[in-house]
Image (cartoon, rainbow, N blue to C red):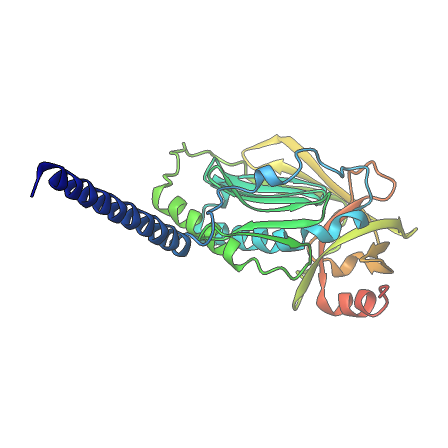
Length: 304
């Protein structure tokens, strides 16, 4: 065989090898894309804070009926967190805020927090906001434990089981690492009754199940209950203090759109008006009422 024929055969061989390599490469890339698509069906989300508007829509001057219902899912998380911290003895270690029942916050440093503020609510774990309700669009944003993002139109029955589970894990971390600061014992003043200026009626605790409600004060009854007593230091009788209180015997309130008279005597061991100190004409307060009273005076007559 002459040299030109050998050269031609070598060229044809390398062309075939090149075509084979290219074909194998294309198949490998296609397989990798298929494997990648099956392994990563979704892109894990880190936080929802960038999905919610930074400016708040409502404030203290807005009517609660405009935004009050938006708090329901976050309230379930807040109630669970509060109970878990109380049961573990860590409630006092956390930062808590409560302003007129419509702005509530509980959290421990940068570990976790639950916030409810005039229609807006958010739950954070570390630097991640895993749950938020945007009061502008009335949208729920939620990142579950696996990193999946759910975007849902707001409804009060939204399942917050996953949110509670994630916060509970953070509380377990707090249990393991928290060390209470050492405090010096403080000698508390032993106050003893010196005299009764106006006797205070005794109100026992509410019997039976209760319901926590947002009650707007419309007006109070004309009949008032006033009490005043004087206490003195058992170790220093010249040191005294006056304790007093006043409340209406009943209040005309609006709860969930229903108006009714609420007797003060069924509120339990409260010896002053729940709305005391507010400068608003019709202040709102979070109070506990007996379940039977709520069913009879709110559920039955509230607007559909």
